[in-house]
Length: 240
Image 1 (cartoon, rainbow, N blue to C red):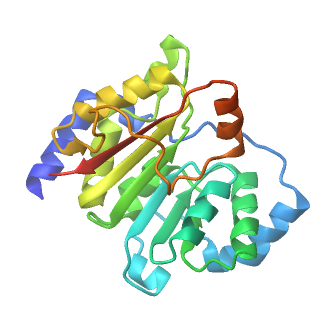
Image 2 (cartoon, rainbow, N blue to C red):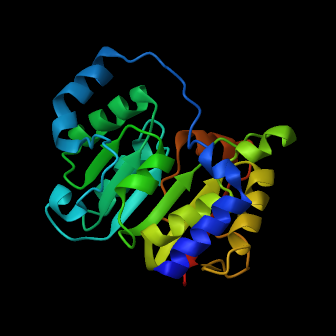
């Protein structure tokens, strides 16, 4: 435990940006009546309020099960699909875009999901303050903001200090699954993950993996593929 804390402090000292980074760019979209109604109906059962204290996941879900954390689920279609396809797992989605939260709750309600909870808050603070070490089986971050201009690359979520922040929350053998449709960001992600001695690349080729079956193909992604756009998936397993 002391070694883990020392490594985290060192990573933060080396990359002070972790204290400024946010897992999102706040976009105040218009909340539809349907989304607002879905939040009103379902937040008590599927929403987790942020208080800065630890969540008791076993009490929240009423069971002990592998837990998947998704950071930035957008409108939530793929998260709901994944939760519906894996009822044996618990899923937690973190998103700050309220229309996305409402849309996700609407989809989850329609599918009568009981294994999904949502948090409307910055993921960095949720990770720091609300999750116990070793509580996660998987962390998935799909299509985060690429900050494609070179001068903005430092704003990208996937940075060494952020990965070091995530690391203790994953069980040994737990997996970080990343996906992006920006090749430059994919290269950056690969460099960051391979730079950590605590993770092992699960790609047989040592770089990227084919889209795994459990990650649904989004409409946006399907359209991009037809236009010849690439998508890169990475999976790294925590080994230490």
